[in-house]
Amino acid sequence: MKRGVRRAWTFIVVATLAISALLFAVVPAAAKVGAFALLWGLGVGGLLYRFRASAVAALARAGIKGFGGFVAVVIAVSVTEETVCAGFGCALAVPNYFVDLFVVVSMWVAWLSAWYFIIAPRYKFEFEEALLIAACTGVMFEVVGNGRAWGDPLGSTLGIPLVIVVYAAIVMLPMQMMPWKGEREGRAKPLIAFFVPYLAMLPVALAVFAIAAVAGWL
Image 1 (tube, one colour):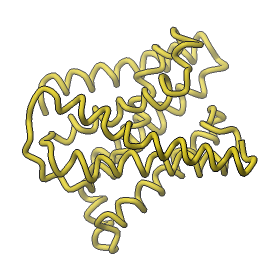
Image 2 (cartoon, rainbow, N blue to C red):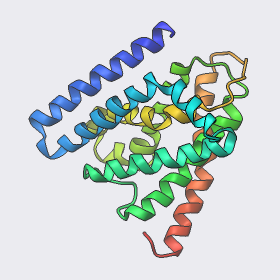
Image 3 (spheres, rainbow, N blue to C red):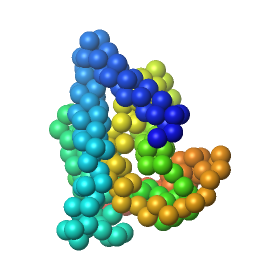
Image 4 (cartoon, rainbow, N blue to C red):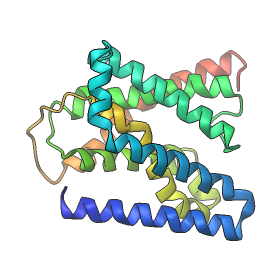
């Protein structure tokens, strides 16, 4: 693992622990957010990181492989994460649980499919580096894209490490299943990997929100 990537992950994990402890001690109403980040982000994410290769190998032996298997895993992980999130009482993207699943799963399948078809076949990344970039995109979903950063800048800033570890756990297995054949290097590749999949997802996001609005689900 590159030194800069290792330092970034170390900082994120330590910050998540510290901020979660702060929430438990000072803001009891927000303690559920810290608990969710610790359980799902560091707990589940840590286990998936440790056993990611053997887990994907087991999935392949079960016939869950290729792009179809990749999409199936993205859907399964997304549904599990949103269900655990709802169980902790954390805010969902859409208040209605089933509509939230429709919206979130559609967006995350589109986002990670762009990684699958655009980034992984073209650009060379260490796993932890790609994981960091993808996980950081969670800030666009949870802090910037929904406007939360402007309404609560302090809380949003403190929440960034928690968002990153949660999204790392979400994308862990899908990232392991991608066709990592790319050889392109360059200083621009982190920015390309950060923005291109997110931008590719936006038309899908607009479409699913429009469908939900027309159907009266919002």
